[in-house]
Amino acid sequence: MENASKALIIAGAILISILIIGLGVFIYQQAATTVSNANLNSQEAMAHNGQFQSYIGNTESQSDVKQLMNTITANNVTGTTADTTQYIFVYFNNSSNKHATNSGLEGWYSPDEISNYVTSGYTYTIKVHNNKALTTAAEIPVETGATDPADFGGDQGYYSNGYIRCMEIIENKRGA
View 1 (cartoon, helix red, strand yellow):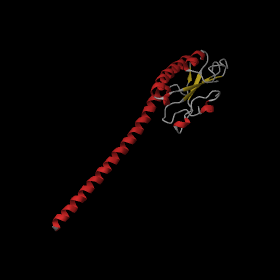
View 2 (cartoon, one colour):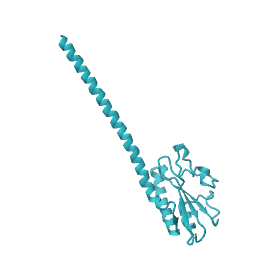
View 3 (cartoon, helix red, strand yellow):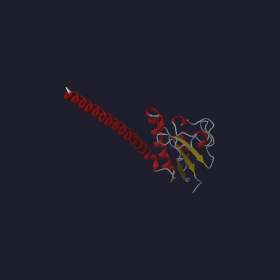
View 4 (cartoon, one colour):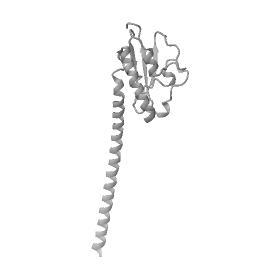
């Protein structure tokens, strides 16, 4: 009888050990999946932003800006149907002031409007402010009357998920 009770105690200890090991493996797998998803989201954002990176910070010609606007237009069509945190706003800062009016938002133009406004003979600098929205609540849309990217949080060049949020096109002086 003494041997039988010791055998039951040993069996119980083995079962508890197996459960603890199984729980440890489960927790490890959950943590590994979370870390893997975080890396995947970061890689997805980098891949998405890659199509725009070659334009950022460079002095571009009229045709380069038009090509960028076509890329942004295509992105915004899919960004509004698939995931709104992929929509890219564009602020056009023109030194010549030849385009004073638009759809009610000074400086904010649709990519199609910008394609019509860029002119040969000018060069353009493309910027993305190096700030990231900390929360999705901070990712507010362009507000009526915004005259500067910072007026609506446009200085937050990136969404909280790492995708580009706002680009600024600066028209340089003619021949610059």
